[in-house]
Length: 90
Image 1 (cartoon, rainbow, N blue to C red):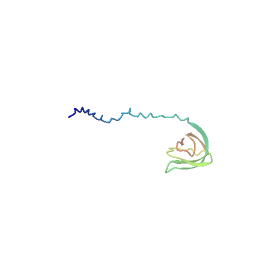
Image 2 (image 1 turned 90 degrees about the vertical axis):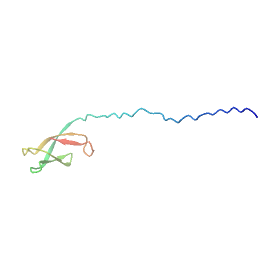
Image 3 (image 1 turned 30 degrees about the horizontal axis):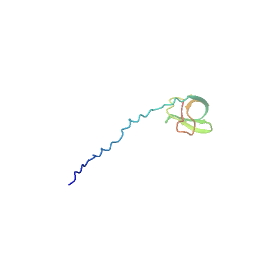
Image 4 (image 1 turned 180 degrees about the vertical axis):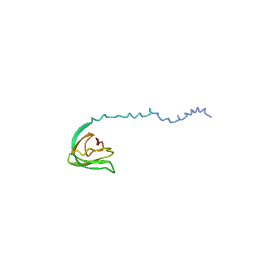
């Protein structure tokens, strides 16, 4: 009988490389606050909403506590009308 030398190679356990946890950085863009003089359409006192014409669009500004009856108001706004980031207030 012949001497048979058998070598058994153990399979290495498969390991997965662990990647570093993903860090999500929140970037907040400072939006420039702009002002525009807008003509007043009407004021609804019970709901405290002021309706103005902003670039040809009718906009309702909510939570207006007092309105002096003037024909125009100065509106502060950020973003661009028609986009999700648009926001306006007195």
